[in-house]
Length: 184
Image (cartoon, rainbow, N blue to C red; front, side, top):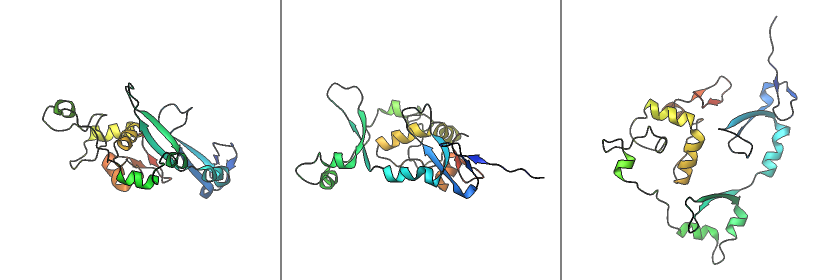
């Protein structure tokens, strides 16, 4: 006698009888989401609306005089593009000044040896040529969403646990179902 595992849709609580029908949906941000990303299982018909409702968005930060921290804004591309009235937004962006992260003092950036300490939340995951230490890899695994937000804001590449090179560099483990465990 064998056993059979039956999956249920997280969206409808209906059984998913064929493993090939399981759609995995990772939610990174939602007003009701506490903590980091979560994974949901559903069927293709249940998530078709996602493709139909998907927006092309612009993510930017706005700093107003007197504000201590910039305000992060996500808006539809069409609305953002309308802000450019003299020339197309593509031209405005092409001619814009590239963002370079502000440099901090050597004392704030380093571990006392004159080198950047990548085993801190401030620098973990930042592209560098040296080897990734276990403390840095652990920080990345435990704070992936925060670190990717910092990297995005700095105009740097983000960390994708599904990328084999990044999985190896930061110690993400691939699960038997092909998903990547970011919690180890």
